[in-house]
Length: 295
Image (cartoon, rainbow, N blue to C red; front, side, top):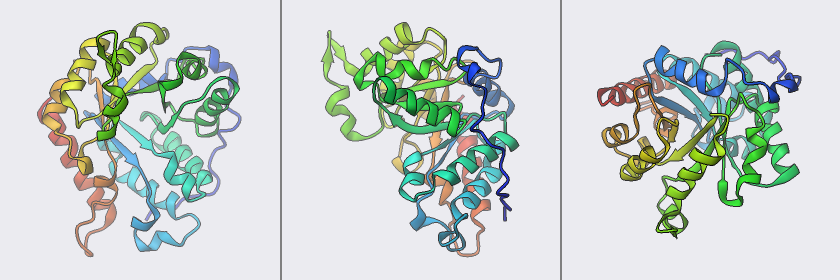
């Protein structure tokens, strides 16, 4: 059992001048080092659904923190990044616990990027506040954003030059095709987004794209457009994406992809007798090793 202290280091006084400084420990450099150090393309998603947590955590005020930190300890050596999904914390009124979890990651696993999965998309002063939320309040290394409102909705995140901006491109859900396959100048909208991000928005080299594992042919198309830009790839595990096809379509010589798995790892416990952390580590290692078979 992980013992979680309430005396987490504060991340609310981060040096704001770093917004204008390209840090040597930037999102991209940290991710590249994690790919190499852990020999892993696996991103572990933190989606703490209260109804699915082990019983000992469901009614504790610190339950989400303790559960997620235990999962982190069990899987950190097998991962290239962790991706907390903010909706699970917000719905449970657990944003303070998300702060604690991010602080725990920064303190104990500073070499692993924290990706805040928030899918923000707004303009002007509102977008600036969302950027502060991601990078100051939570101290994330990168945040997912929605490009639907155009460049001025993404620009506030790009002002943080050491941080990552991960733009939705070709999402793993079936309904994504409703818009992402609309034709723009003779090609699907998702390809237009990929080209826009790679060739116009990525002036500081801090951008990535979300491309779902459920569409490996689209991963291949995006990789052709964006070169070595990192891709965040959800959709394996519970969503059934093909690992071999995903790796073949998205890998680069240095890594190139963060293949996310959340529920399949978090709630991997197969029997009453199995400890949830041992189950999470077992599935994470199986997933990491399967991915590496095709690198």
